[in-house]
Image (cartoon, rainbow, N blue to C red; front, side):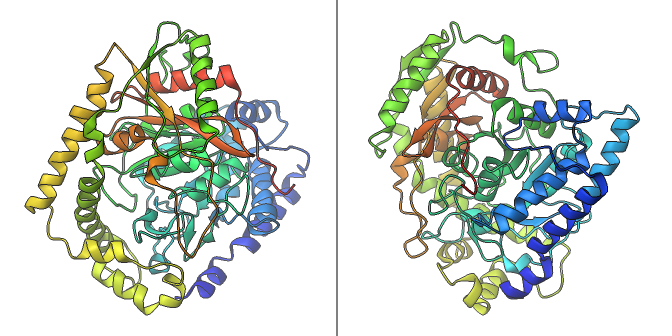
Length: 520
């Protein structure tokens, strides 16, 4: 199946317009604007009758049709759910009967297209090879979101195969969805691999979006699209039903416009409240007074205006009562990159072979990584038009997970990222969390060279948290030449609630997020 045939079959633009017009005709609601509305504000509108969930879905679908598929064409949404409006009507009926499932009741979300849903949409990971991959059941994390009342509005574009195909890829590009654009400047890189989730949430094409991360794929696009992005503690969110790179590192998490939205969605995904109170609602009462935060130095590569934003962030935290402790990154951090890539190659081959063998698709679909490589070569005009699949080739050449090279890489990571890395940092001077600038501002989209930013622009604590399974979050810290930059925070395992509390206090003190001017 080539890209033109796939797009014709999905019919994304026409379907979103059709669904939006149908709901508008049915509800007559034309005056509620969901742009920049928080989940709490949406719930207030739903409670008051200012809008229904069906009409809210309609408004988001209209924005997707107007700005994502038409107009500036951000290409952040890869498919819309033809059952979204029916789900919204059912939830409206439940509300009318006095049955509320929780803070997400009737709230439309977008899900990254490497997470399985039971809706009549394929889960493609951006690849034409999975163009007919449909699933009878939701991934458990999606099931939990639905049980909490959320509506699956559609699926978001991504860097194909979660950016683990080529060393010269352009973040946000997939053969199915094309090139996602940054919400603040469509000539700029949205970052990967949860690029569509980042641009869509920033542009108010949904209330909150779900992304996944192996190393940086929630935090980086969140930072570059002016969002709060949480990568939870590994294991807090069930990873079943997510197209894998590394089951050891892969983690799904929420990407939204404010910390409280992200906290609400993360709590639903985890099946438990993540705040301090018994119901997880004590964010407003939390004080940073006396909280010790370890501040890491600037990364080795950064924009010259980043130090100013970092200084402002530190000052804001100190004014809230936090105690900033300057820390040096441990030498062990310099040893992480090569063993991580080595381990990921082994893990990707093993886990993808298992995943492809287990999905229900047509006989033409690849069942192994070797068959996937052959599929891409046979469909090179669409799949390999901008960059290759050298990471696939490297992974295919690897042996089993029991190989000594793989086991040595994993042992090195346990030492460098965790024991001699984050654990050592968090054991110093009583610090409870770590702080460093996130990456940014965004570079230009470059389909010839691919992403060119040096790894030095990404905070090393973010990579270490991804490898070691610690929770991490990015929060907007301001703009540089109109482009967002965030601050990354990391805490110990299962301290997600503390991390969210600190992030909320920072957000409350700075109000640093500036909305993008979509269509302006």
